[in-house]
Image 1 (cartoon, one colour):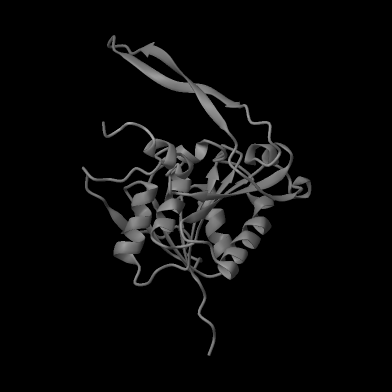
Image 2 (tube, helix red, strand yellow):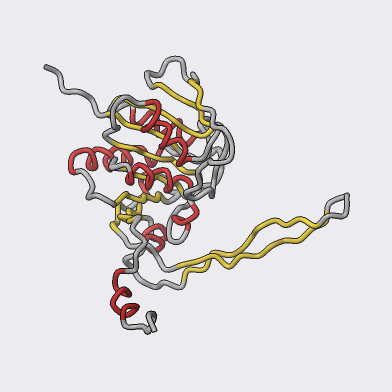
Length: 260
């Protein structure tokens, strides 16, 4: 009896027609049975937002008539897409969820804001092994070709070995030709942050409005971080937890005079 192919859920935050997710879908079709639920419009930097005060729409869509996958376009956030897939549409739990390929970095502190990674985290919460993939190129014309063999290898390894409960993988890929990618580094998240600025302007009606901008500051000099790996020609993989408890600080808090 032939072995059943793994069921792979694909989503993203750049929208269902973005080149990154179309590339990811084609790679996953070489590995398993693919089911796509992705936002109908860009949802970047939505983090773990969910829709609670508006209606959600999730409609079948055909983008590539020659491809075998089933696809749904969702009006909600990346996390909504995963919830809809697992709770409403699919009749069995996916063997894997992959999110991306994001147009732009989700390394270091960016993981907190990332819709790409939040979709992967939501799958992890549901007990589904999950990976978020990002390419360090914000262009809609980004070249995803050099990342293909690495993504395929990472996915096959996760399907073979599984992931511990409560952990998902955050994979970032440098903007390099395949021959210039030195390999893969298993990393920790760099201690880096954004220094935000707001560009204040006034519209023709006299009302003030703001554009968010800022600078990314990496003060982490460690050579075991995702930022170091990416700047030195490596793909970074950070095993990411969604338990945000600072376990090491619990005992100290217990020593405070909180009950006096």
